Length: 322
Image (cartoon, rainbow, N blue to C red; front, top):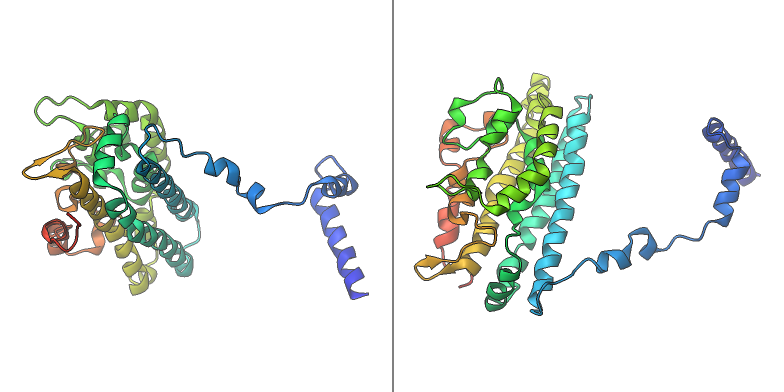
């Protein structure tokens, strides 16, 4: 009887749920009756997923290169999934804030620990050959990663550090965006000419990035943190989680890319250009960019020494396979 009563209760709840839909419950039950059983492969679109790796050359390791970048973009999507909840939330509950940042850090941890696939998982000679078929495409063109930055911190914190002191939150979003740090990584320092990689990226994504920046103005994760009650804002667990996020995004993740770049692109006393023509030696080192999402959490000395670990990382022979 208990089972029968439970079913009757569920039917009443379903009737309540669907009463305003324009169809009675019986129609929805018919749909459930006719529907096929769900399978794992249909649910995650497995066949489609496994068909998305389309190499442009015959070199076997290119498929590794494609898959790893696709995996990376999925992790970026997971990070954005958590960031959007932090930006949209009205509640100022400590547990919610900490849990979302903890999840973000777990995604970064997976990304950072897996990057050895890129550093040591491909034959250097194969990479140097198949990369020529990828011009001018570049990981520089990852729009999701730029979105992660825009959701995390006010745009003035993303202005190139050599110009950062000239700008504040009072400057229009569009003006701040024009001076964002990563643009210098794909611009000729002498002529000021933009690479095709940057031109392609700006044409496709600038409207979207500016729209997001306007949407989250005064509502980035950094703003949300500053707006918390003082007691919550001073919580050590929260501060540690935010600082870990900062280090993961702006030190550890770029360091892994530096390792990969030196593994594949460094050649004796010269360097091979990146596929997008980016100035990778000047663009990737964290200590050169000094991008910090939550600057209020650090001392002046910590900010001044930001990212200097890259020197040890690059020049310690045990860090990178030659």
